[in-house]
Image (cartoon, rainbow, N blue to C red):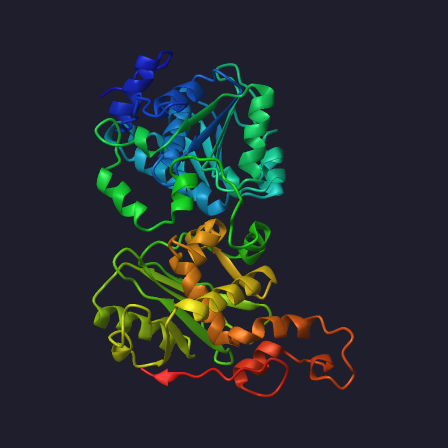
Length: 479
């Protein structure tokens, strides 16, 4: 189909998106108070307001794809320069990769003069630039259009600096899209929604129900599978677009924010993805915690390095349920890569799981008082800064949204939470978390107290099995 320019009506825009880009954008609103994705897309393209806020479901809303299509349509139709900015540079690159896929469509071949990791230049001299979420990067260009994605993961000062970018040209008015799932109550997205109310910015909200087939691209089976793998709290907030709340949370939200550090790496944590935040160190000391899949769960293996302070998550592995022999073989392989003892949840699996292991392992029955103490001490470790981890999105979300009921009531204990608790148990023992905290704060201890000696490390002493406050000799067996 021949590209017809200029694009001045919604009908012409729809024809371009459908036939040139090959994208079907749903046009029907399903939920009360929501809009259709097309409403958000067309309003932003025609700059009906200087700023548009897009609030949509995680993964199922299609925000990244729509932003890529929007940026390319603006580059082709208006000759506009466009900046795309994600909550991380990785997210910016996701948008750019979608743009590259669109450019490979038959009717757009030959349109890209330059195609690099950070820039797409079209034959009409329009440029689409993927920016890093840094002050230096966002203060540079002055495009006509700015498209920001996953702003809830973006520091507010980065967003504010980027807002100064857009400047109108003779053919294209300036316009900004602020797009995200809203995950955290006191976050960048929360502030943006507040500003939207104060400044009359339109907020376009849609959930997975607006993108379901036949009007959209999402299958019901994908929705059903996802519901089985996330907590009810996470589903309510990130998929049904309920307002985030910290009421009844198991861990202090600020502790979760501090625990997961983007500078240690950023990962999605998708099933089958092997995450190694750092390679094995021959001098490192490692322990492992594993929550095994049953009917609705995922198997999660977490590896902590415990000869450093704070303890550091160095490896993460999450996979769908498999036959015991295959699953345990994969777990043993990961444990051998980071040699150290393994602690796994034996509840409901009997001895079957352990029989397939050929590494040092301890099965734990997570029931009654033992479960309560195990989880309580893990929460202590998290809230007292005893563990740090790379930003693994699925793990952070499960820790952030885990409720008291999930841990101690009728709710579902998140898989990553259970695996983390088991790894922490193996590291320092259930009864030693408070002992370590006391040791770290022992400012009034006598001068001959071991905790006052140079180089004393309680975790190192505990794992080595030497003497010292809170020493715990962890039993394990050969699987």
